[in-house]
Image 1: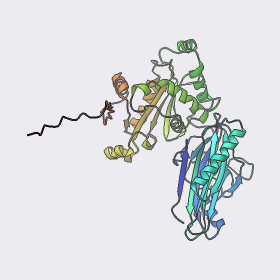
Image 2: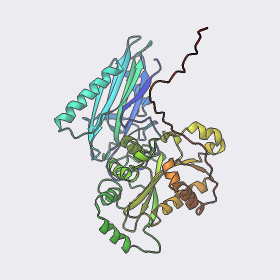
Image 3: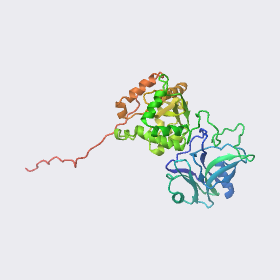
Image 4: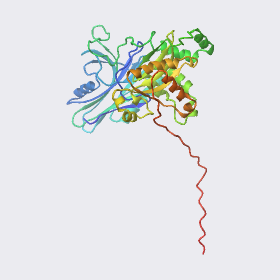
Length: 435
């Protein structure tokens, strides 16, 4: 079997990430898994590929490819927890090659709408382009047949080349695991539920649950639709001494529907920077959604006394999630901190526009600083010239200095230039060589 490859195509398909995720009380966590295998028969090659995808010891129950509302889809490595012989409800695509030099390509594609529901399709072929075309054509037809309400196509592909034994390439979407006794989720002692297909309340989640209709959705609805007068009245009802923040929690994931709504506020908050800064300051929508759904990016959420979120700040120790910085730079200059996982990066902060000046940002930073202090870490952040000249850099430093003993130093600067062309260069007159 030759070297295999797993590819994620188009919007929203990121590289496989850590399996550590937050459980939610709403919707399904669907994990995308890939595997390749070889064997003396096609069946044993398929079994080898299942083991590579971490699902080799389940009985597979193949579904008809409909994604339930409020589902969260992400890529996961590692073995799916469960008992030997348990049922795994899944959608899968597999491809085989048994002639030397032939390549097997398998792919899952999907589309989702604003509710988080959607459709999977599964295809296989002998070339990458053929699989991509089949996925795109199938989803285009299925989307059109349902009125065209789904978003852009996302897909994950896997391939394997036959050398001297049959091979199998597999892409599988794991919905949930069930045992044979009552159809419920198995609880196996000593087995960590890393994939979190079990839907039980998260320890750090507020009540009611996050998700459509829950507190995260509630904050977005209010931020976008509530009038200034109503917000002013709400602030007036809060304690003038303690401010509006009742508590700050750390959320690893925000469901898809809520993430879409957060993006509206994000654009409203930072949209002006598009014309003030030469470098792109705003994440594209799919980049933003990826951060909201990525458990490696922690969201510090400020809640008021009525369980409504009024602010959020992002912080991560996985600099691969910050596409505009170089993780290698920080690893080289801060090797000891890097080895301890103590290099943090501060992303963006969103505060309800009518709660600004009420110490919401301060409350989130205080919780964040405690995390960094406990780990004796360093925090990187960036700021465009427009915001720096507006004094935001100095203000942030002064605020952080009230929360911790810190030293702030600039580590890099990016300058942008323009060259205006007025025409061809003028040439000097030639000297007269006449005797």
